[in-house]
Image 1 (tube, rainbow, N blue to C red):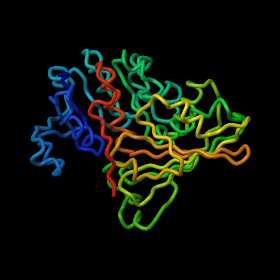
Image 2 (spheres, rainbow, N blue to C red):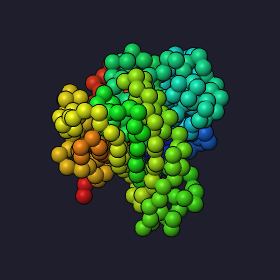
Image 3 (cartoon, rainbow, N blue to C red):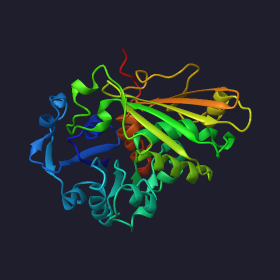
Length: 335
């Protein structure tokens, strides 16, 4: 058993990690922490009463290194890198769910802040599993993709060789409120969200450069990514619709089936996808259609799982020599 910990156990993604690790056959949960500590996990998350009783400490790198071989960092952007740097220097494997290691240095500093761990940044492996599976097997630092980029990239990457890359790429994305985290704000207030839907940070969201960077990195194509996210009155789930221009005639569903024929957690759908069918699972459901040279691609994921925690667990499985699917959730919250 590999000893693992979770730093940032009070948030939604931290909770999802704990829920999966409790029954994992290859990982032993030996450390839980938050920035405050001095509590129990079942006090932070009452849903875990009589499931697990475990102390939650104040996060400390020495304590992590003394009890863990691998740690999941479910911390906010900018907070992870200082902590990760210490852990990596102490020989602990790190799976980071923040943005701190998922971008090239110039891209990160242009959209976030000055990077505090330039030494380890080049060693990070982008944990979009279907495209970096082999690299993750030899990595000590996995960088979890953003939830929106996960759904967007899994949907559009198979089509990049067939697209007019001079035409703009439009991404219309919708997410449940849990994607904003537990911090209170007027935007996520029940009265604001209920019976409502609205865009936020249109064409300025920080996930746009992440999507563009990974398209270029994987396919060598520079594309103008126009990304508009929306908040919907749902707890969890993410639906992304991508619009692009084809440069040649293709069968969209056949392109998807060929690309993902050996990927067990990608489901190619014959009809438009929905968020309910992937809620509570690691699956990404994808549908595509065309009208002349106009391409429509739609993908659905659980933002907390495939968009964060289960993707982090799959990365950890690979980093530790386990099967990718060990402990990965597959049963959706339906009805």
